[in-house]
Length: 238
Image 1 (cartoon, rainbow, N blue to C red):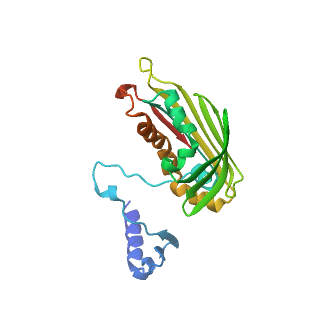
Image 2: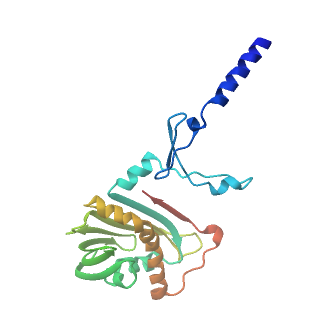
Image 3: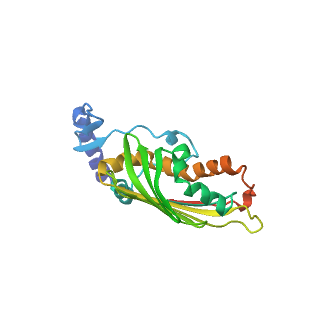
């Protein structure tokens, strides 16, 4: 047993005699350091804010393969369902009034109806997606007061652009309410334009239904007050 202890002490003395430079840290460059004693490359990272706060968890940023794949996709989709304090007929009139879009729809610069008949119209729209602006023709089909669908044609930037509004009865006992289902999907021809769109895509679509609600308020007056416990709002996007 004593012999084993002496052997361990000799090993420890050998380590003490090694040159101090064998474990030195070489100068850093671009936040990367090299430990010469073990030949390992290490990245210098900033301290975590939560690390110095006892009792508070630390959340590390992460990005999955699926998130990366979504960011590289040229196609974007968003859908939203909510109950609003306007009747189906009222909100239908606002959505079907394409000629007024330039007055209140986010990023819509121009909206001219060039052809119209019962259940269908054709409009020339200019939509600003900074730093690009798109001029295209929109073909709108409608079923009063249930649905308005707009499809893009003759577009230079888009392979596909479609919006669909569906209106159904709202809350029982609240006749001047309705359920709105809104969905939009678009695909740019260029991946570069698609990447630019991701910067503001969420903000544009999140403002869309609210913009039409504000327009309804201006045209038809104050909305029906809905008790908080009965309100419903659901969002999906990819």
